[in-house]
Picture 1 (tube, rainbow, N blue to C red):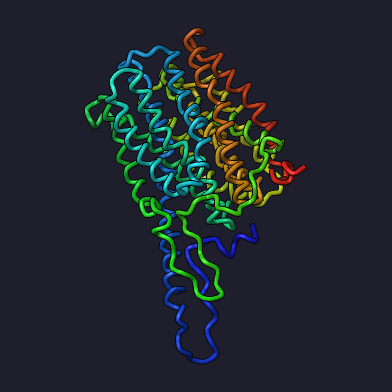
Picture 2 (tube, helix red, strand yellow; picture 1 turned 120 degrees about the horizontal axis):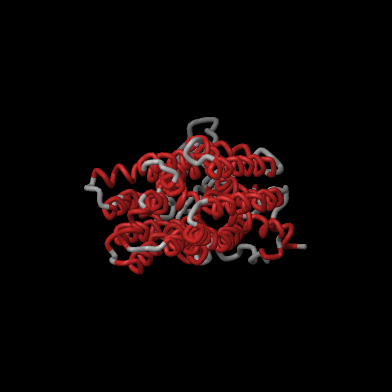
Length: 448
């Protein structure tokens, strides 16, 4: 990426040209250069704000539903199997719509796609509680998740393209904001529902307000050619527009990404950690409630699990970028997950807070996976392809997990078999994570 750094906006400031030895009249191009510097500073700050606000909205649609799943099931007349299908909708939508994100980004620009994605999320969250019946609820949920899906794929792309020398810190900031939004939704959905009259419908719809705020920073990027920077001074490279498309003419041809073992390992790792995450977000509150924990406390326990990602999501990517191999981090996270599942199996209520903490640490495999997406590709186009492939394939892999948990729960009458399944899936997650963490790039493997 060294060759791309001169033409990429990588920080909130731009180096000033060296001062002349003696006072001299300003060259004709100086106003243009100053405009470029001002535009770049403003755009970079707006881009960081947009990344943070978008990340805050990437999980409340899911964790707010997990906190009220019992009420939603009763209100819509869902069986355990249908509820399991509902918890499988997020990875299905992420897989299907995630494949379209790179093509949309090349045509309209990543900023424009994220902006429309946040608008779709707002509409879906507002409509789904009042759509009427299970089918309408699922359709509106799919609309919201479509917006999340394209943003999921494009966030690592935006970070790699515009912050190539800050991949670890920017991925950490994005992941930390994502974990913060996840935990806030889990902790406050039940109290908000009570404050709004006790009905689950406004308790879910209220999260549309947060999504609407996230639309605003991306509005300037809807028209990339209209918001480009002023021409650069003579001899200085032109700064790229943050709204510009990911792909441009003259870029390297598409990689044969499926020839890369690292890409496959990363996709499977992404899929298995997503399976664990969506089972946790969709079912963990119910596990605690069935063990005798109150609804409010169960929501707080889920919030604690999600909140563990706030500090760790910032620390783990920074540590990961300093290591040639990320396998040791994968193993530590996996062992925490196994310990948490063992606790849920043997004493779900007795050690509830400890199990919530351990599973929260384990769920930080997500920011690690995002960081490895940026590290396992050498070029910007490579990151686009790897992000789309790993996330879309990974989410496809994760679809059966939450559904299978719902089926096992309904037919076994307890949580023993579902928890055993979760623990068993942690073992292959650790194995493929070690493979994905090896020091190599997909470009090297695809070229062989």
